[in-house]
Length: 492
Ligand SMILES: [Zn+2]
Image (cartoon, rainbow, N blue to C red; front, side):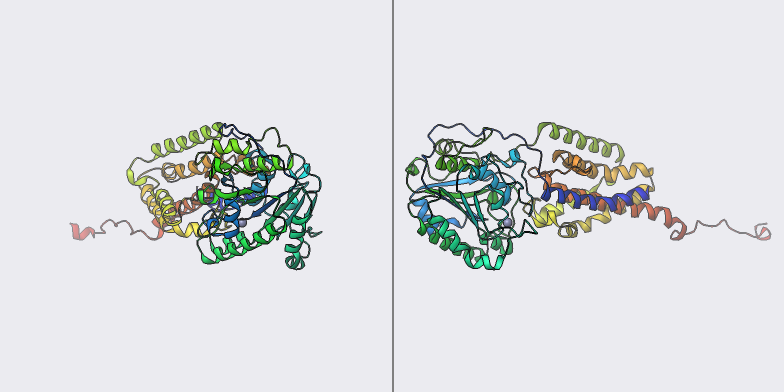
């Protein structure tokens, strides 16, 4: 029994690390996206020159304080955009350029893994002859999107890295301005400095605002290169106040966007309505004469404005089947616990305490939090370490009165069932058995990380108590009182 518990304690942290690697590396099996609210209205008329600037990681909070951004919004259409889930640059930008949500493309994360081959004619860029994309850095993202011309070029040995990054830093803005000023039908510029500042400082810090102001100056310079084009100012996600993105938090998922220039006369129709990033994709497609894939839910922009999204409408739903099985697994764990826990103090209090401590100290885990991905999970387990002795003590005391199997089930069935049920909801079982899929769904993928680690720690704490029960009677216990060795003579 101690061996089995010890094996769990050793194997589960490793399993957790592998699942996290699957999350950030692979794609998910593509699925459908639910339809967006139906509205009516025309799309944007085509424009001879469309210019899209994406300021990576720009939180909605700071955009009103950016002069160039605000001025463009004032003379055009201001939107709030829900980028869907997960809130990671490549998947969101693939949605922006294809009109297909992250769930539809299956592109979930792919840390430093460009799409190879790049987005095909399902995407807008490949449909527009001579389309140009220029990125400030991290060019692998724009190189994934299917533009005719992309800069910076990739490092020949590392497709995720840029060739000659230092030289590119010096000249990229000139290259971008020249591209904007050209007669190319579609130019995309990807600014990355704000995202870097978000990761380094968090969106609540003055440093982040300063960098955002600097990026806004760049917007001004780009805009000046072709004032008569149709301009899109967009972003792919915001940042948490403390930095980080990836999860479904409102601050991160809902951002600002503006469309202005010739042909945009609809600003009075609805300012600042919440639309989906695939609606913005539709607006870019309409501007450039491209067509979105037939599965796209992107609506003509005026229709989108007349039928804005509800607050959480862009958060993908959990699959009904997986959800039902997960509930079944959880109910099984509860039933096993209820069978095993005959006395209140035998319940897995350590686990309730660990979950509560994590929630109170760190908040609800999301994919925006570094602790969820950290290989050792230290920021998480330091919080619940103090709860683990409850498992050891409960088991030790329980073993004096109950059979060993019953005590172990009482301590671990519910925590293990909770972990198994999130693994089920996220669709992670194939990944556990070696499939190259990303088990990424809202909320539960982030819960998976602490819940699996908790079971490992609980198993270790319980094993310790079982071991103590086995060993201590031989050493630590008071020797049983010896029968009086009375001298026959004395008793007589
Ligand atoms: Zn980022």
